[in-house]
Length: 116
Image (cartoon, rainbow, N blue to C red):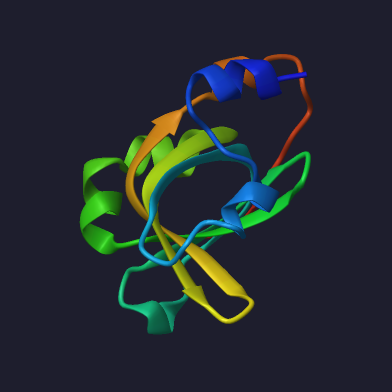
């Protein structure tokens, strides 16, 4: 439904991210299904984005959170520009910038589980 729009905006799927090499810069987009800010993580936020192919584990460092707090906490759909970190079968997207794409999901009932 949304993939043609996301493709024009250069967003890759969760499945495609797994094939990207460590250190490559990408844009992923999906529904925010989880936000976590563990007390032991020194202000780091962990987001889970979900698209039609799977989930993307995303790391938001405190400095980015300070700059884009409203988008990170308020968006139901986020596009994340960042760098892939891969260690074996473990893949994370380290965010450099986020974009609120919630307008693409108007009318969809989606709620994230927030632990922030």
